[in-house]
Image 1 (cartoon, rainbow, N blue to C red):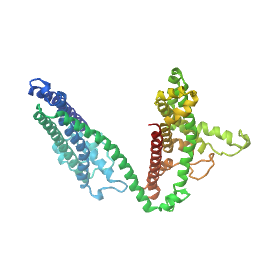
Image 2 (image 1 turned 90 degrees about the vertical axis):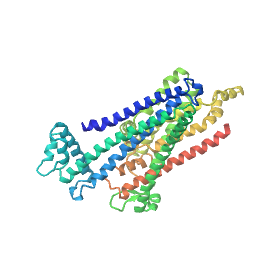
Image 3 (image 1 turned 60 degrees about the horizontal axis):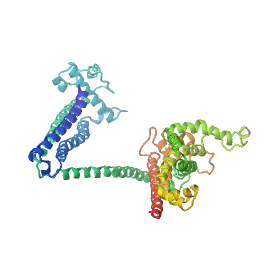
Image 4 (image 1 turned 60 degrees about the vertical axis):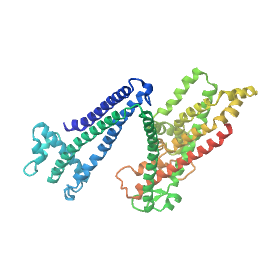
Length: 499
């Protein structure tokens, strides 16, 4: 009954608000029409705008307060209840969160006991642990506790239950009053001279501004969260070693070498190989599909090419580990038993393995975007080139590709950003060794792989070996931002040439 009340009461409240919203729309629209004897031409706005205004006044404040209430009430109740639990009540090896979890379970168990008839409501409020095996009582209701119920936990659970019950009824009352108040105000404003359209349009404009602001604020929040943790890292670890060192060797003993250069080198090396594979193949595929292929071939080839974009990266990683890696070992490794009779590659994981597979993954990004961009070049430019006597290939090289160059550069940089942020292919295909080497047949690692590694497992967030993940993430963000700025510069430079 408690869970039904928790979920059901909120759902029912939302349904009631929505019903009042629909009712407000119809009533206020009808009232506006009645105020002008059914002649809509005498209204300042169309009749629907009066209904929209009523719906907004009824639903928006009520639902907004409901959302805030559901976020704030649990925190307020927990803060009030947690003060009742002394530190001595927290067993050694347990945490306050574990004790609070037991408090919530006891509160649920008390409600279940009341519903089953094992306790009445007054007994649930006055129940004392002395002389009563509360754990056994609640076990009969299906509630499992992490520890024995102490008097402090029982008292906290009783207060938790009481405050939650009171808060929920208060929430229902407040939300209902807000919805009815909105309906009342809308009824009062249903006059011929009320500028309903202006009010609705201002609200929609505010909604659009809010949506744009949320996107911006989310980005700012992400950057600030990484920045603050990065500053904490540099308080514990010298920035000179991070940016200028050449060794990555975290050991969690306080004397780690945490330099980004080996990781940055591996990231850029693998990304460059991937782009060397993806850009020519993807661009040539886009030119063929947009300029040479007939409709039948295009309708068949393009969907097949874009299937590559839908394959999970873990599958690409397994493909690199089980197929591409052993294939490269057969060519460049195994000494006299290899295809070339050399022993340059000792294992299946290498920069070349990850770069080749990542390049295959990026082909749809380059080809699909480039195809759309090339098709967007006006046909009049092609016709003009043909009219001057240029061949088809000359038109593509000298007219179509220069006109589409800004978009193609954007597609390539999007693929580069995708390559820089890739993790699973690198984990399975490139290995986990941080080093600076020019040999593409050696195993290396990237920034994203190290971020995952440093934050995995039982880690202490006050140690440099954990905080370094945020410094790595911020550096990766700055690198990606630099690529976007470069793309913007190139796009503007070449766009001026053709506008």
